[in-house]
Image (cartoon, rainbow, N blue to C red; front, side, top):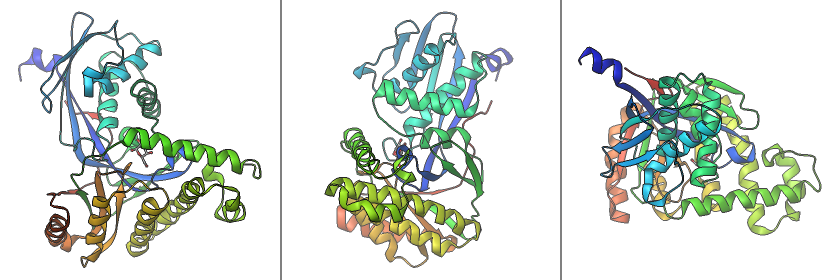
Length: 374
Ligand code: GLA
């Protein structure tokens, strides 16, 4: 690359995330255990001399041009609303931004539960901070991007995705307390086990509205339980307390709360299992998690259930479950390394036979969070 071009163009990379366990409890003050993986969004960014932002993506055709002085949510701007939300929040926090040419390209499957939206938010935030000399801690970048998604895009997501994409580290899962954002990096050893992500290729429907509904159910449940218990968050309720007061909750709300309380326990047990390298125990917890998401939280769908069912039939699988928000998208399976190829071939065939949809599989490595690469 020519020297002047090299000084002008900067390249950033943001990973996707796979949540190992702790699903749909980040917004209820629970614990989660995600990893950042080797599917990424790349952003090439260069500063302009005016106040325009040019958003382009090699994954979509349309170029979107907006002024820094006119950043509002527009339906027709589609994917660019995610980076625009970040720009808006950065400006609202008092940072002075410069116009920018922004070219994105990624291989995180879009809308498939691997957090392509948080990845595009974080890569944008990191690029603006780096090129406009804004000194921001990674924790604060995660919070700003979450706020952008909550307030600008209108998805009331928790903090998990933005946090792991910002603070993930190669070879480690991140055990995060979503109440106070304390975290511990837990080594994830891949000597014997592979993380295999299965994309059902079932596009997610209604994910935003159903997601927001689940949040509301949990808030309603917490309000009722608070009449009897001194708790700040739903995930402060212990299983023992829950069993004592479950009868006070209406049926649907009871099921949502039951998932949250026990899923939080499963995360803590998973961390102990991982530390002892007890992948069998970890695998069982993944299966319990899936059953709970399917039956109590009701965020699965036939395609996800079929893929999990077929995955569990293959020899060499420790556990399998849906990962991410659900309603379609991806499953995560832990598979013995020497069985990974066989697993993919078997599940592909059996899933296709039952659904007539061709799935995709990715054997994932555990990578770093967002960074500048050139
Ligand atoms: C989405 C949200 C996260 C989390 C998961 C479900 O990915 O962005 O905050 O709630 O769903 O665990």
